[in-house]
Each structure stands twice: as structure tokens, then as C-alpha cells.
Length: 78
Image (cartoon, rainbow, N blue to C red; front, side, top):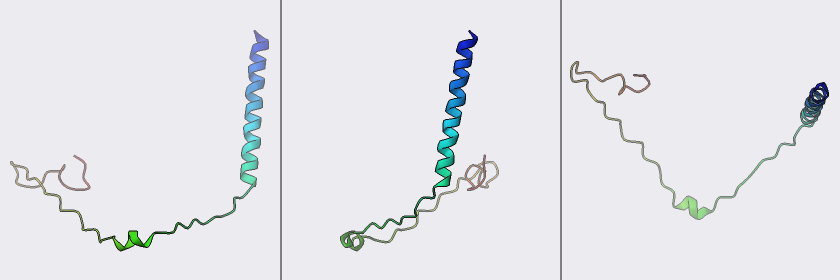
């Protein structure tokens, strides 16, 4: 049984060394910066319109207190 354990340990060490070599090579090479330009068809821009803002969210009143509830107030957790 120790032979299988040694063999599996050797495979783990070998895999770790290979991973370390690949990572070291990846960090040594700096990628060249590339800019991507995608032409936009003028017909798409001519049909564009301005976006309207979203409608306001109605606030629900707490029937007992007459104030907005915590769940309805933006930015606050219930």
C-alpha cells in the first residue's frame, strides 16, 4: 500500500510543479494591449431616441402609523 501512496504523492507534486511553471510563464509574458473598434451603422443611430426616466415608485403607507413602511423606503432593509 505505501507504493500507491508514494505514487499518488508523486503525481500531486508533479501536478503542482507543472501548475507553478505554467503560472510563472503566464506572469512573465505581458500581453500586448489591443483596442477594439466596432463600427456602428448610421441607420441604427438615426432611429435612436432619448430614454425617458422610469416612473416614480409609489410609496405605501403603514395603515397604523400613516408613514411609509421600511420595506417601501428605498435603500433600507425590512
